[in-house]
Length: 299
Image (cartoon, rainbow, N blue to C red; front, side, top):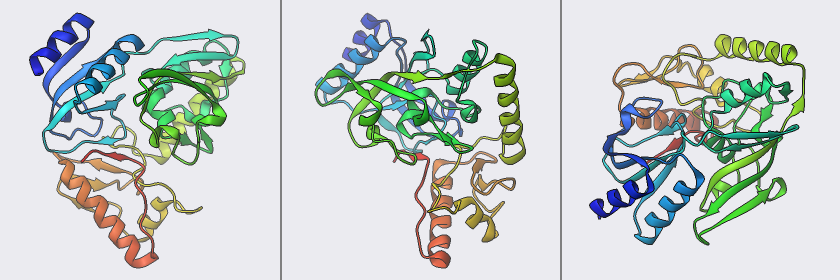
């Protein structure tokens, strides 16, 4: 089957890697190997790959830049599809149609140069547009759902391309319909606001400064480890428990911000999983609830 798949990929002109090491591809720097790492650069190629894998009943997972994904240390007998080369976008007035693999921060910056704003608070989020929509990423009181007008996706069950409008996307705190139904985002329509470039650039500069002052920028993290609990940030609870700097193996709770876990030195996925479980048990024993992960853990 592997040879059949490689022939298919060559005909589709899709770049791929066999037995790729996820530790070299993931943002956090951990993970075992996967059978194939795939890099489609068009929606058509992505759809063809999905149809092939579904028809052959082969396992696969989707990733953008793997900025919030913790892969397993074990070998994954399946394909990881990276959308990071699907980066095109088209502007029509204040409406921008962008492909799923474009880096959200890069898109916001480029559009600011064209006098478009309204998403400055999201600047600095390291993931792709598709990943941001799946998890309804947010920062500083804003969420990606604030600017999403519609999403074009491939419905894996129906094997067809569909368009979903905002009221059909089931956006909620760090969630969307894409966590409930087997669909793959191809592109999205985003509605920005007209804004002078100098004002927008000043806002972007301010947001980055806040991130640098408040978050462990430059460290290998997956962003916020846990979702907030009611109105209380779990990071504050972790801080109150005196767990800043606590480590298991090479995984450590950031001494700078308790909401982040970072790879300090040669951490494994298991180190992070054990540290996450330790924090959950401590919080449950003291506060009586188990925090929910914001990051995605591949078992």
